[in-house]
Image (cartoon, rainbow, N blue to C red):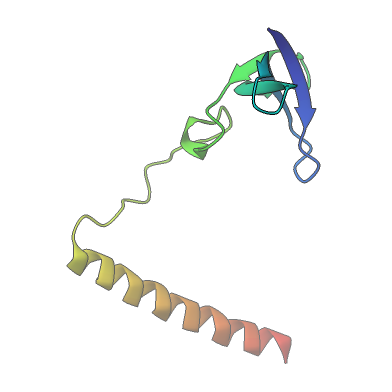
Length: 99
């Protein structure tokens, strides 16, 4: 096993993976399996554990508790209506500003 570093071109973030090599009998070739360990801190070069899927588990995520997910279908519909109204108001503001 070895550690492989790979940089994401879009975000510029470097991730560390645990690389395990194995032999594939069907294709008769050597293959490798990579498992994400975490992000590499650009200043300290230290690996910060992350799961790579959820921003809530990211070391830079800050939850201020201001948004609560709707729990019922009725609450979801009300939230959608509220967001659509907010979207329309923002479109009107943008139209005014662009004139």
